[in-house]
Image 1 (cartoon, one colour):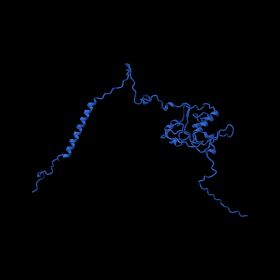
Image 2: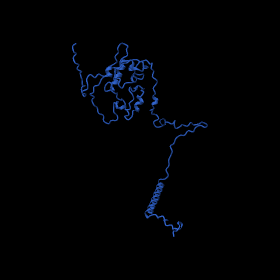
Image 3: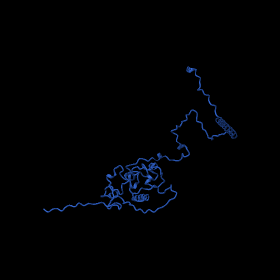
Image 4: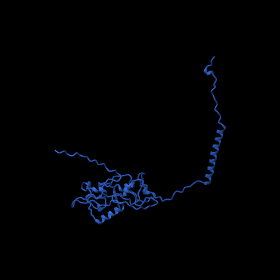
Length: 283
C-alpha cells in the first residue's frame, strides 16, 4: 500500500557543511595582518605628531561699511591678468589693424623699390621660388602662420604680408626657415641651381597704358596681397578699389605659359604620318 506524499520521510535535507580548515586559517591571517598594519600606523602617527599648516600672511583691507563689494564671475576671471605672467602681452586682439585708406596718396620712389626688390631676392633661391621664413616657425601646425599671414598686418615697422595664394594646410612643405633652430647640426651646401630672375618692371604698349605683369601668376593669384593698401609703398597700387586686376594688366605669355619648342629627352618622339595624295590626272 502506497503511503501518501505527506507521510514520506524527508530524505533531502542536508546540513550546511562546516568551513574547511584552510578557509578558517586564511581568515585568521588576514585579520591579524589588518590589526598589525593598524597598530604600526598608530605608532608612526604618534611619533610624527599632528601636522600643522601656517597660512600665508597678507594684509586684509576691510571694505567700508555700507558699500557693496562687486563679485567677479568665473567667466570674467582671466588667469592671464592675475597669474605670474600677467605682464606678458600675448593677445592678438591688441594687434588689431586700422581700416585701410583706399584713397591715400601713394608716392613711388625708385630707390625704395630697388631696396625692396633686393630684400625680396634675399629670401628666395630664385625669382618665383617660395620665400623662406625669417623667424622660427611651428612645424606641427599652420595656425600660427595664419594668425599673421591670413589677413596680413604691420607690427611696428615689420610687415607680415597676406598669403598670395589659396590656403594650404602645410605651410612648411614649401616655406622653410632661414635658420633651422630645431636642427642640432647645421650643414651648409652650395646651391648650384640656376633659376629664372626677375625681368624688371612690366612693359607698356604705349605711354600711360597699364603695365603687364612682370612675373608669373602661379601661386600669386591674390594681387592685393603685395600690391594692396597694406603692402609696401614702393609697389602699392594707386587704385586699390579696382579688384579685377587682370582686366587691365595682362599676364606675360612667356612667364605664365612657357614655350616648349623641344620635347623632353625622356619622352619618345611623336609619330608623324604624312598622307600621300595621288597626283592629279590631266584633263
